Length: 397
Image (cartoon, rainbow, N blue to C red; front, top):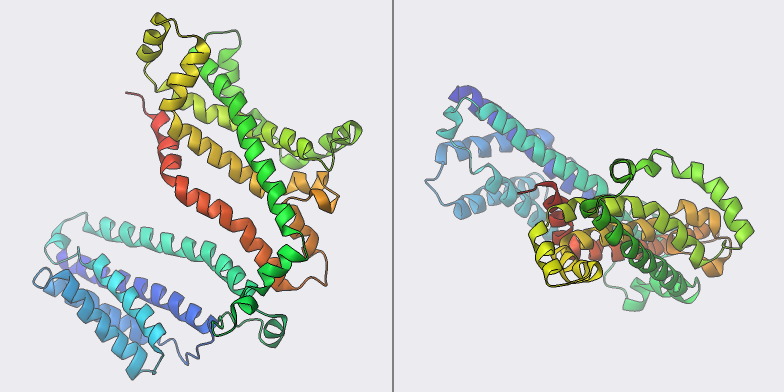
């Protein structure tokens, strides 16, 4: 069993090393580095040797020294002996190998004796492969978008596949695309409109969702069961089905090309899921707290504002983040309802500019970066609330 698991471990870890090193080589090639050959066979052999040596050494050497030694050996072979490559490339390879050795360090001949080790090895590396693969698929387009936004029109025409950045140029030249889109393409106005729409949608949605979710979670009324189970039925209908009748109604009411119209649509589309998410969390709050508040003659409004809301900050934050991202990134309704450039949101403005053949590509990419970054920063900041808000209401003690 140990021999079988050892062979399986060395093979899987070697293929995994090929995968992560190949990703780095692809990125280095896009940066303009001339890599003559990826030498996958040599990487595979080095992976076998490092994996087997890790099994033999086990815990005899501290993980820090073992990682340094194996990483340096790989860097010398790949970045100097096979082909002499620049320092920044070798630093990247060193960090990759350091991560790789730290990851495989938990495996040794002793724990590979266990019968279930085969499944553990397989699922461990499969999970890592999935995380890295999907991270690459998601992050690489953003990387291309960011790099392109720093390019000049001449550089894109000369070599459109060159994704390196010339940091030696002047600051104004490096960020020229961003200065231009704010000065010549009114992106400041589009950001303001998107912010008003997104924040307004969050506020209106929470104003209606919190009391509605509390009523479903705590109160008894006719149709409660039907409402709580069918609240998400609106999502059975594709948005494109709702666009045409809404377009007709909004045209007759004069709500096209208006922020008010978008607020109505976005609130209507986000309110059901907001109520659904909040009611699950509200049910997990002990009823004894509300009963004590009633004995103190606190009104239902006071119970919601002074007890329910403070205890539900994680859930409310996760709902607010979800609603904000939907309203900020939404495109279909803004495309159909907004025709006047003075009323455009960011996503609608990007589509409008992309339809103009004279708009340089680097300006479009700069605009796309501006659309992406606010949501990214907000998500990173509120991520802890998002996780706790989505999970806390699912398990009742």
